[in-house]
Length: 185
Ligand code: SF4
Image (tube, rainbow, N blue to C red; front, side, top):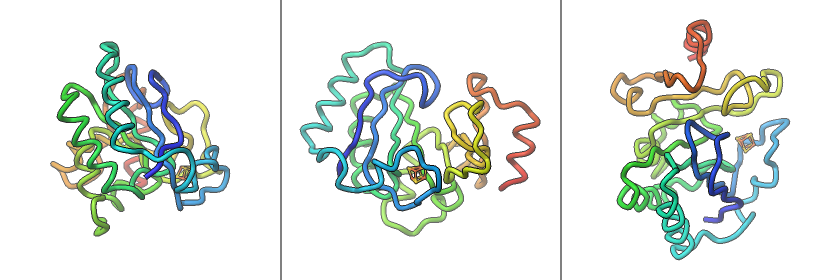
């Protein structure tokens, strides 16, 4: 597995102050994708165990961080390796919230038979799901590029067996948004 980027502090990929890592590789091929340089699984550098621990150590040194966001590419194409790294993050940074992006929908991930995918999903707190759809592009959305994409509370979704939108006040969903998005599912 390679990574093609790391941001030690960001407020653009989830609530609070977050580290962000970009996992190389994506096969979704969304028209209008802003991250075409991440499509190759060879992009960036090898995410060795040493580098994985180095980033964890760096995050430990920053008391202001609320968590980490795993972006891409699509990290679910490297689900087994990403899940192993998250195990180490959970052990060493138990207070961290973990957000993750995917071009797959929650429903596709939740019912996937691909090894590691369901495990990776259940390790994270928040999923931003779905492909980028150019005709639904909306620059006013927080953390998302198009209106079909949802910010999903993974724990609540697993409990209820259906996608539950994150109700965080920071995200700024209005009840009309929630009603509209619920009808998409
Ligand atoms: S899922 Fe994301 S990275 Fe992959 S093609 Fe779509 S917009 Fe680009």
